[in-house]
Image (cartoon, rainbow, N blue to C red; front, side):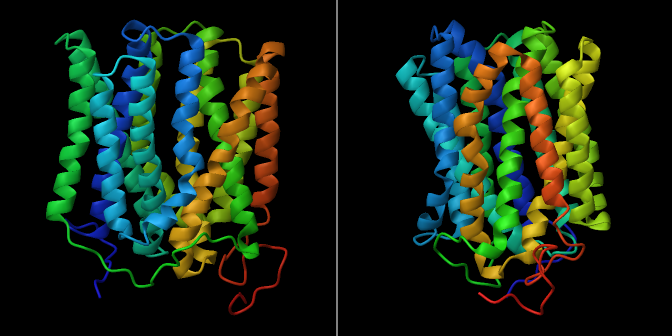
Length: 400
């Protein structure tokens, strides 16, 4: 059986995960940079059309649990590559279908690829990476993804402003990069064997309840950042497209440097302490969002907010330590669906709250961060099977 060394050598599982992360991040960053302008200028989208498109984009995330049924017929490693292929094809085709129906179709294809990839990626990382080194390695993987995002944003900027390429060409090249990287992964890297055969069914275990709760709250926090923090920059502080792009580039550049550092710190501090720092910091950030009046301070808060995403590694490694080794795939699929439950109702409900007062949205986000902080206090100092929360006494092995 193949041994998974801690060093990241060419053709190692960690290197495979890094190249996959780059393939995913490059296409997703390109799509995000292009889609709004393309939808308005080429497809004549209204606000309602954009809302519908974003709702459709979240459907595969909510249905991520179905990935567990696909690995009955194919290996997780294969499914991850197939998913990335769908992502690349969906992005490449987007520019050639400038209609509501066409963009809904290509978005559904690319989003299915993205969400199934993310589900398999988490499962594979938790199986392949040694527990002691997983936080640091996951940090380096995030750094590679941030680098790919930075390259993608830069390429789009040059292609649009200097080369004056069409949307069709930019979408096509962005998707092709991912397709090429998938071909490289499939032809160059070996087939890795799993130490533990995965349960090919949906996994919902009572002893994982704290992990499920942390994942749900993480999904809710993601919506506050993606939907409302960015919207505030434009509506309240009148950030231009160039200013928003600059924020994205700064976020990528900072994560390139800090993500590996954060990963190592999580390994040193432990999950309980890392989560406490993250959630306490989010209480401060969301509260500050509610009262900020200076556009430069708002931009700084947005950058710091993004940095905290790297600390979500702690939730993943917490489960790696408490979970049955055969539950990684089934639980990853369920967790991704739980993470997206918030995407179904928070944008709508909080959008109505926004009409009353934007500050209320961010204060509600601060309250959710308080809940997350309280939950993090239930994480043991030494998580393990049978020692999943502070509410139970450690035992040698959890009874299932």
